[in-house]
Amino acid sequence: MLRPARCNSGTIGIMLQPSPTLQKIARGQLCAGCGGCAAVAPDSIDMEYSQDGFLRPVQKAGLTEEAEDKVAAICPGLGLAQDPDGRRDHPLWGPMTGLRTGYATDPELRRNGSSGGALSAILAHLLETGTVDHVLQTGAAPDLPFGNRTVTSINAEQVFHAAGSRYAPSAPLDGLERWLAGDARTAFVGKPCDVAALRSLARIDPRVRERFPMMLSFFCAGVPSINGARKVVEKMGGDPDQVVAFRYRGDGWPGFAKATMADGSVRKMSYADSWGGILSGHVQFRCRICPDGTGGFADIVCADAWETDEDGYPLFEEREGLSLIVSRTENGEQIVRDAMAGGAIEAEPFDAEGILAMQPGQKGKRRFTLPRLLALKLAGKPAPRYDGFHLLRNTWDAGLWLTARNFLGTLRRVVLR
Ligand SMILES: Cc1cc2nc3c(=O)[nH]c(=O)nc-3n(C[C@H](O)[C@H](O)[C@H](O)COP(=O)(O)OP(=O)(O)OC[C@H]3O[C@@H](n4cnc5c(N)ncnc54)[C@H](O)[C@@H]3O)c2cc1C
Ligand code: SF4
Ligand code: SF4
Image (cartoon, rainbow, N blue to C red; front, top):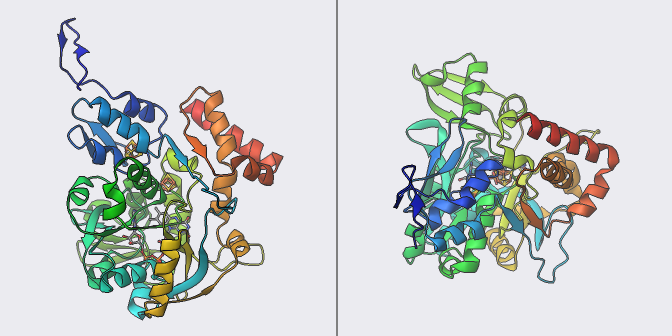
């Protein structure tokens, strides 16, 4: 039922009644940009670029009460609940049914992927064995060189072209109804928050389980604004408006950020300089209070299996790609084993304690979530609710000094904002 709203004139009429849920999310800058709200309320919500270069919901019509409830139930910006369901999840790295390092056995795919191309090799295997009919994933937007679009791949060649991380907004859930209404079986690839929203939707829409039997993700430090890539090109000495194609990385490990200019020239920047020096500074606020950068809701998650120096810092020298491959469900572990047996990936077991050295950023993300949330609450701002992430224990492990620094840093940022 649409709720009538009072117009400025004082007469009662049907005008756009702002969604209280979307208003709360906007007030707290809690949106992760997944597109889930547009998926459950397609007649009322579009995803569009905001002025600061993120994909955000724009309300174009009033929401029914049912749609309002659905948005509140699935939005990862408002909260995440990791139900251990009798498992003993790792306090930092979440549920695990298998842990390996590995790579695509096809050397071209290994090179084209972000790290070892393992994620794409598993996708290609799912298609080639008929386990799924489609893969729903993210690739470069044809009309916006720095931007993304959701693409459907139906063969290994299309998966190859969509390989590689794109450090820019993506909203793969936008337009989901088209897939839910059909009868194809689709593997979904998205950021951890995209997958979390899809899992939540599965609880209220039984079609999700049937249409999306496999959900894959990657470790995620955060989504930078589309303006971040423009800064990278400026730093390369180029004019962002003259860019015709842009790769964030891949084509090697970690690979270079590469801008192809209108005159055919190519400008490059190392991963350490592009991500570390520029893009990471343009990450949206929600990512700074995210406890699930490791994709706890997915069936399979891949990440960079960085080597580290003697001080524990990841080394970014170019080398042959290697992915960390985490199975999180029995279903995911079976697919990884099948992909190994079918020769799509080569992989060997890895010890969970080794992730600590590989992924210092992800360790910090989970350890500092609680002090950051407390700072939001103290400042009277909306804060997401997180269950099942062992936040108290992780905060304890972080120690008093780092906890206090993160609490005060967030408080300062929020007050200044
Ligand atoms: C925003 C972002 C942040 C990341 N942060 C980390 C991190 O902190 N630590 C870490 O180890 N790894 C991080 N990664 C992931 C990492 O770069 C690799 O994707 C991962 O190591 C898997 O490599 P692969 O070669 O197996 O995957 P590939 O075979 O290269 O496959 C990558 C898949 O990711 C999809 N994809 C690419 N960009 C996006 C996007 N913006 N939104 C949704 N899907 C996308 C592609 O469609 C493709 O299916 C991040 C990736 C992104 C996009
Ligand atoms: S996080 Fe996703 S569901 Fe929530 S408001 Fe943003 S786009 Fe919509
Ligand atoms: S850091 Fe968390 S909220 Fe941000 S894009 Fe990644 S998974 Fe989503």
